[in-house]
Amino acid sequence: METPVAERPAAEERTEPSIWPHPARRVQPGRTERLARGWVEFLGGPMGRFAQIGRSRFWSPLRAIIAVAYVFLSLGFLSKANCSLGKPDDSGTLQLNWAGNRQYTSFCYNDVVPLYGARGLDSPGFVYDYSWVEDGITRYMEYPVLAGLFQQFSAFLSRHTYFLVHRLLPEVGWYFWVTALLLSIIWVCTARIVAELAGNRIWDTLLVVGSPLLIMHAFTNWDIPSIFFLVAALLAARNRRFWVAGIMVGAGTAFKLWPLFALGAYLTIAIRKRDFPPFVKMAVAAAATWAAVNLPVYMRNPDAWGEFNRLNTERTWEWTTIYAVISRTFGWAGFDTGGGTPVILNTVSFALFAGGCLAVLILGLKAPRTPRVAELLTLIVGFFLLFNKVWSPQYSIWLIVPAVLALPYWRLLLTWMTVDMMVWPVLMWHMLGAENKGLPGEVLDIVVICRDALIVTIMVCVVQQMYGKVRDKVADAHNGHDPLLSRPVDWETPAEGWAPEARLVPEAQA
Image (cartoon, rainbow, N blue to C red):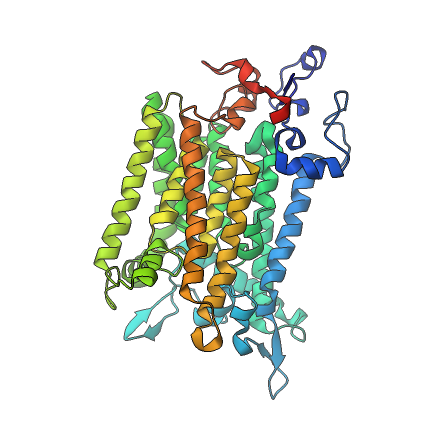
C-alpha cells in the first residue's frame, strides 16, 4: 500500500491561489523520518487523515521551532557560562576566574572572553585603532571589519550597563552575557528565515535549531551573524530580489569570508541556465557592499585593515585540520615552516579547495537536472572545511543550514553533528597537555577523522542525489522545484520533467 508523503488539500480548499503553500502540504517527520517517529508516537502519533492542519491558534510549527531554538541557545550559554564567572580580589572587585585551567576542564573556552581586554574592547576608542606589539610585530584586531564593529558594539553596551550587575559578574563576564544575548536574537531571526526557506519541509528546521553543535559553539566565536547574512541572501534571491541578495552576501563576507561561497552556487546555476543577469546583480551588489564597509577602515588604518589577511597568510595549521592529523600521526612537519609564512601549506590548501570548487562546477553542469542551490553550497562549504588549513571547531556550524536544506536525512545529519560536537571537549582535554593528564593526540585524531568521514559521506550523498541515484526529499515535497530558486506559488505545478509518482513512497519506508 502506498501513502502520499504530503497530502494535497481538498479542491474546495484551493479555490484561490495563494502565495504560500497550504499547511496540509507540510511533510510530517512522524511519517517520513524514522528518527522522529518514536518521539511523535510518544507525543500521540502523527496527524490523522482528518486532522485540521494549520488551524492551531498558537502552537504553529514556527513557534515550536523558536521554542526549541531558545532551549538549545540556553544550553549553549550554560556550556560557556563557567568561563564568565569571577572571584573577588583583595579590594573586593570581581575578577575573571580561570584558575585550574577551568577553560579546558569545563570545555567552556570561547574567544569572546579573552579578546575583551586583549583587543582593547574594555576601553573607549575605535577597535581598529588599538594595537600592541607581539614578537616584534605590531598587531591589530584580526577579524573582518563587520565582525570587529560587532564586537565593539557589544562592548559598548556591556560597559554602559555593567553597573547593573557589578556585584554578580566581572566586567568581562558581563560582556560575554551581552554578546550571547545579541547573538541569540540574531539566531532566532535566522531560524525564522530558515523555516521559510524550508517550505513544505518546515519541520526540518528542527535540525538547525536543535543541532548538538549549537550547544558547543553557539557562543564560541562570532559566527552566527554570518549565517544570518547567508540565509537572508538565500531568501532574497528566492524572492528574486537579487540586488538585496548581493548586499547580504557582501555584508556577510565583511563579517566572515565564507558567505561569499554562495556566489559559487549561483554562478553554477547561471552557467547551466544561461541566465546571467541575476548572478551579475548579486556579484556587483556584493562587491559594492563589501567595498563600502571596508574602504573607510582601510583609508583610516591600512595596517589594521590588512591584519586579517596577514594573520591568515602567516599562521600554520589548526589543531583539528587534516594537516594537523598528518603531522601528529606521521611526525611530518612539511606543512609547517616553524616560523614565517608556511608557503607549502598555503599552496596545498588553496589548490585543494580550488580543485574542489572546480569539481562542484563540473558536477553541477553535468548533472541530469539543475542542482539545487543548497546542494551546491553544501559541497563548496564542505570542501572549504576539509581542505582549509584553519578549522576552528565553531566553523562546523556554517554547514548546518546548507546541509539541512540540501539533504534532510535526520539520522545522518544528527550523527555528524553529535560527533562534530565531541571534537571540542576532546580538543580541550588534549590541550591540557600531558603534564596535566591531557588526552594523547591519537584520541583527537580518531574523533577528527570520524567527523571528516561523516562530512564526506554527506557530500557523497548530495552528489548521488544530484545525479538521481537517491531520492531528493526536498524536490519531492515541492513538485520538483528548488524552494531556494522559486516562490511558493510556483510549487502548485510540477516542474518540467518531474514525475508526480516520485512523491509516493511505500508506507513501510515512510
